Amino acid sequence: MPFGEEWWTTKIAHELHTFIAKNGLSDVKEFFEAKLDHWKHIKVNIAITGEAGAGKSSFINKIRGLKDYQPGAAKASVETDCTYQALQYPYPENPNIIFWDLPGIGTDNFPAEKYVEEVGLKKYDMYLIFMATRIPEGISTLVEAISSSEKKFFFVRSKIDLDISNEIFSNEPGSISREDVLVKVRNDCLKILGKRIGCNEQDIFLISSRDDEKGEFSGLVKAIRDVLPTKEKRESFILSLGILNRLSTETLKIIVEALEQRIWYVAAASAVAALPPIPGVSAAADIAMIVKELKLYRSKLGLPDETSDTFKMLTDTTQAKVTIASSFVQLATKSAAWLAPYATEAAAEEGARIFLPFIGSVIASALSFGTTYLALKDCLKTMEDAALAVLNEAAKEHLS
Image (cartoon, rainbow, N blue to C red):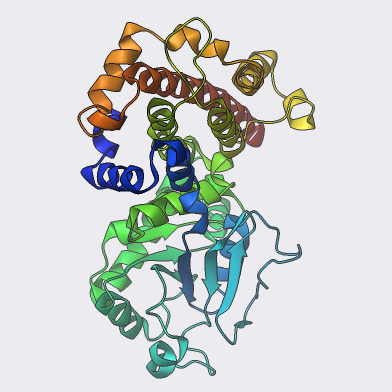
């Protein structure tokens, strides 16, 4: 389904009409700028709980892009629970994304029968229940409390890299694979959890906070995004996590989806506002907003700076892709003329198809909308291809 048809809703159209009726067209840019920056102000609270010493703190550090020894990192324990109260760990790039390290359930300080009441579970958006080598005590009580609040949860079996290493070491070379170990461990978890709480296979993730390739870290991140209760929270979560562009092609695709959902805001600003025309065509564009958006694409997709060591280590082919992708920012900054090739009959048709049915009377130019819309889609696709090339090279380097 084309992006515009899926995303443009009568609710947003009504909001725009109401804004224009109150403020006029001259201030409409404020409406779109507020929409584009809204994700930065949305709070997301993710609770991390479960067995003491199961790797909760290590996961919190990993997803926040920190080593266990770095400033601001969660304190990782080895055998005992270091957490005596709910500790919040905001994401470095967006402090509104908070990972809460809850005390381990079933410890002397927090026995299962008092855990739910003393920790307070209702304020969190979703829950990750960690376990390592055993099922946490009081798990049924915890799951029942979470379910009653109509929130989602996943079981996370951590330290899967150790299981894989141990199984491979203990068996004849080549007789067992990573996938074999994952199946075995998942089935073991299902036997126990399934009997006690009716857990399903899709509720369990096997991860390593040390080695992305040996577990399902990327799949877990995607699952967290999918179960957050609102679209705004899902967008905020994905656009905040800089680590995503380094995990896998799957998580990179998730970022691209979130960025695609922003394109029509910029295109709409060009369509309804009185802006200088693009040289040589009868269309307008908000260049400042376009440049800001292109910089966001480059940042969120993890394209390396051309002066960095990371860039210098890439192959010539990948370097060329990164250079082309990064050039859009410079081109847009210098002149609006680079948009002219996108100001076609197809752009006008796209603008009329997506925009006119909802906005109609307030639109200044379907061509302006379509030109910006198609240009940003093309730029994003080029940047995505470059980011995938960088990611694939990193994966090959990891395997070598």
